[in-house]
Each structure stands twice: as C-alpha cells, then as structure tokens.
Image (cartoon, rainbow, N blue to C red; front, side, top):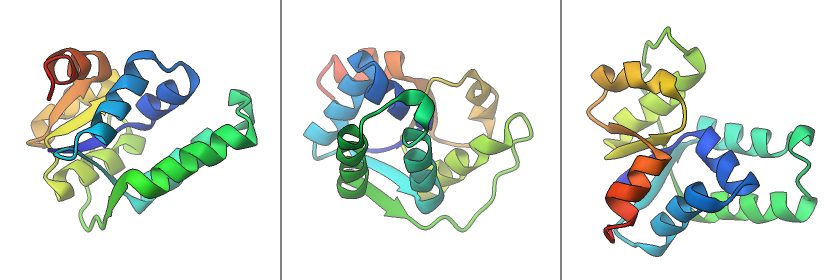
Length: 137
C-alpha cells in the first residue's frame, strides 16, 4: 500500500508523538506499506522541520532528516492538479495521483474538498490509525 503524508502529520509526529508518530511507525514496521513523496514534498518537510519556532534540537532535526532520506520512496511527479482551495496542497494531490497512492494522510480539512479530484482515499491521521493500524494493517 502506498501512502502520502501531509506535512502537518509529520510535524505532529515530531513535536507531539502520539497517534501521528504511531502511524508513521506503523508504515515503517510494515514492509507492505510505502511512504511516498515527491522531491518538492521532501523539501517542504525539511524546511518546515528546520523552522526555529519549533525549537527542535539539531540532533532531532538530523534524526528526522535521516528518516526522511532513508524511508521515503521518492517519485517524479509530472502532472499538475488545480486545487484553488489551497494551492500549497496541490503538490500532495499530484503526488498521490502520480503514485496511485492508496491513502493521503492529513490533518488539513481543506483536503475534504479534494476527494473528488483523486482516487486516493484522503483520511485523517486518527481515522487511519483506527481503521488500519489498530487492526494490524
């Protein structure tokens, strides 16, 4: 199964742990699951995690950069999605479409309106945890 993860889920996993961290750990621990991202998404992950406002130590940032560089399957995305509701979300929708991802995991309610654009199931991190992780994948 292929999963695209919105930046807000990654940030929550790093800052708060709990359910977002459990979901990411589930994906790592299950070889049938792949975390998919485009280069544009990976750049955003790293830029956001490096923001001073999060007050992450260099060690934590390096640890997460290594996770990103090691575990994420990178894909080339050669398509564009028109999502006027939030242009910053277009890269996640395009990645999900290009990868034919099964899930796009997000905490962003803007994506609710995007479901008609993609075959990918757009799902909250808590619902993914309940429906997929808690039943063993």
